[in-house]
Image (cartoon, rainbow, N blue to C red; front, side, top):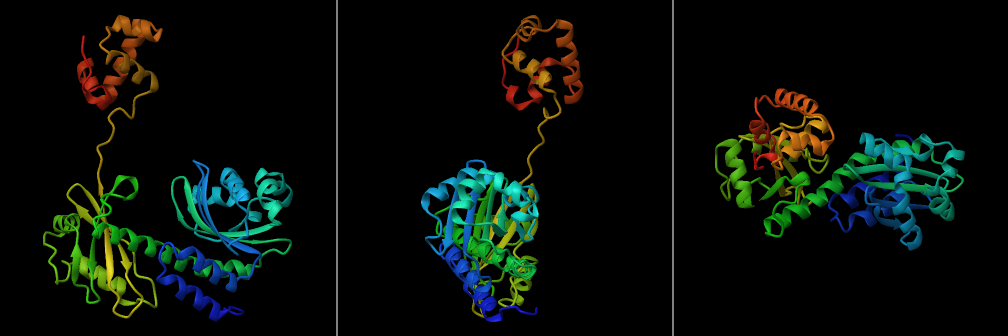
Length: 357
């Protein structure tokens, strides 16, 4: 790419590839600052729902503590954060992509946070997006905006930064699992386990959960000093073949009898014979909620009947006629595929152990 600062780009990729989670923010910000000069940069972990934010800046004193508190409380107004939460879009975006200057200046986010910092223009990329959280990097400037070239550069480096960020967290999680410091930290309650491979892809260590999962998936045991059963070993081999020139493929899915085993590969070092840690997440299939199709009123009827009330008492409690209550019951029976009140209460878990009259 014409005009690319190749030494700065190489320094960015090399400095972040093996960074620990604690090192990553400062290393990536310092390297990005050399690649795309700006007034200041921020690594941000933003929880919009709970209005919390962890922010690391370059220079380190760029944002006073009182303003960081303002940012945490007003981040829900940030149009780029809202866009990332809604779409997971991996592309670079600026505030000006969503708001004109006048609209931007009307926000409390601008008046209480950006204006005191002298920031008029911002570009941002996300590294990880959750239901209510965004982890990303933001570049800030005053009167002078960002060029299309700056956007392209961020788009080019973003996959590498997201990979390095995930790798650092994966290594930390894998080491904690192998050391017995963590048991089931996966997102959404997924059970997690881990195993470590040497540079020749032979098993060095494995948690009992990892051994159990691999054998359940592939029908063969995990043996210390041996390669993993196929096709898992083939996936690891293919993932690491191009490393360190290209990031390994960090996702693999294997069928379990009652779900899916998802495997993430975290490379332990940047050498040509890099070992790795595999983190395994068990995703169990959950039975569908049989009461999900019920209306709110049908659930109300079952709820009062579950207290042991007669149909007359239930109708009085809800302020409806008995005929209306019976109609709600008929509709609930049809949706649940049952033919009695007892069966309906047993079919919906919250009411399964309810008294009967």
